Length: 260
Image 1 (tube, rainbow, N blue to C red):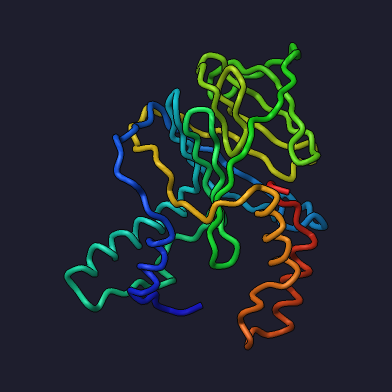
Image 2: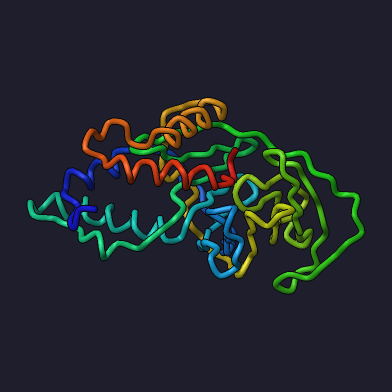
C-alpha cells in the first residue's frame, strides 16, 4: 500500500457519491453494536474472530448503519478535501488512517432499504427487502437493561435468532435485520458465523443520509459481480503477483459472507 494518499485519491474517495440538497433528517437514538464474524470457516478459534464496532443512527422514518472506523477514516478524507481548496500539498499518511474491516452501509428511507458496498474500486447500491420473522416464542432475556423477546428468520439460507426490545418500539436493527415491533439488540446465525450485540444506546442527533451512492444494481447482479471478483481478484492489475492472487482466491473460498 502506498504510504501517502494524493489529493487525487481524496477526490476519488469523495466523488464516489453525490448528495442532493434536501431537508435534513436527524436521528433520535444511536446504538453501538459489536459485530463479530469469522473470515475462515476452517478456523473457529474464538480469539481469531474479526470484530468491528458498528453504528445505527435512527428515528421512526429512517436510519443509517455503518462502521465507526470507516466513518472516522472518511471524515479525514473530507477534511483533507476542504483543506485542499486552499493548499496544493495535502497528503494523508495511510498508516495514520483508522483501520476498518467493513465499508458497506445500510440506509433505510421509510419502507425502503438500500445496501451500498464496494467490489474492488467500484461502488454498487441495491434495494433490499424486509425479512419474514417468526415471533411466536415465549423465551425472554434482558439486554442492556431492556427485556427482550425472541424471534427467528431465514436469511441467506441460514437461521438467525434475534432478541428485540418492545420498550423501544421502532422497527430497527443492525444490518438488514429490521421489521420487528421493537429494536433488535442481539442477533446471530445458528453457527455463530455472524453475531451482532448491542453494547450501548444513547440519545443522539446525527443527520441520517446515505453515506455514499453506488451504481444501481439488483441484489443478484451485485452478488454475481462479487463472485466474479472473488474468482479472479484485480484482473486489471497486470503486474499483480499470481501467488498473491491465488492466496486471495483460496481465502475467499473459506468465507461465509453475510450477504450471500
